[in-house]
Length: 324
Image (cartoon, rainbow, N blue to C red):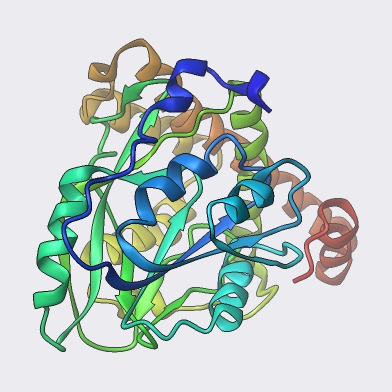
């Protein structure tokens, strides 16, 4: 696995444990993993001193992920992967948190110290009307902070009162939605800094594109019930992004919409200010990714016209292992 690190020295970045300033917060953190030995120690070393409980839900990793997590004293559950929504919901159900709060974190993510200090100060003082906490996502790609192109800050609901939040049932772009109450937004950041190489990154986004295709095709052919919970959430950013994705972007011509999205992101929203590595990120994630999604949608439509919806469902199962 270490041979896949883009910058081996970066593997050590952020692994120092944060300073503990009092009792641990009443939070159960759920972390999904699959072959994350390169990230898991960094993630756990920063979150464990902050919270009461951490549970790793592993999809039967074949590397040292489970070994490292258990050696650090973390609970590990294992479950066969279907998609993120299904896996996370299984994790919640089987971890059965008893803490006041629950948190979602990925293995390649970690909290910066200002956010840790802010949570230690803010969370215990929140009234019962506040049931969720939005965190500011800071993406670091090949050691470059992606600050422009409308990418920062992305606000994500990652902490919620136990029993109040649930995860949308989608194949991609799933969010936590609250059953009631309001949310606050932190000033500090949590970081997404994946250390794998570009081959791994493009392989991952190829799989993401397939899942995105399924969600878009579902809007046209009703492959499975659509979860509309996000449109009732109080997060205006989440509602607006979903509206743009489904109604505006979703109705635009294939292929043209990817070009238009990249143009506004890279030029109008100043993505070019992120430099050389920023260009690679915005081009791949903002143009190549969406052209790939459209190509998969195009292919799916042709398959459905030739063979029908039920045959397409079987195709997804046989070709991609996707049980709708």
